[in-house]
Length: 48
Image (cartoon, rainbow, N blue to C red; front, side):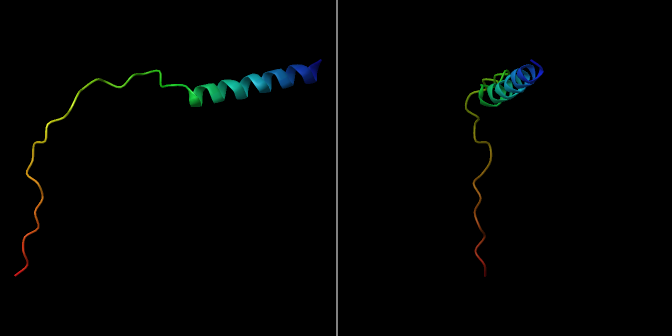
């Protein structure tokens, strides 16, 4: 009986861990949309 309870608890512990790892996050990311480009592109200075 004791061994069966230990196996049951271990199985429950492992399955809850797998469910937590492979489930979607509880907090959804904020919906911020597309960010505008606000700086000049990088250009190397010609070496003289």
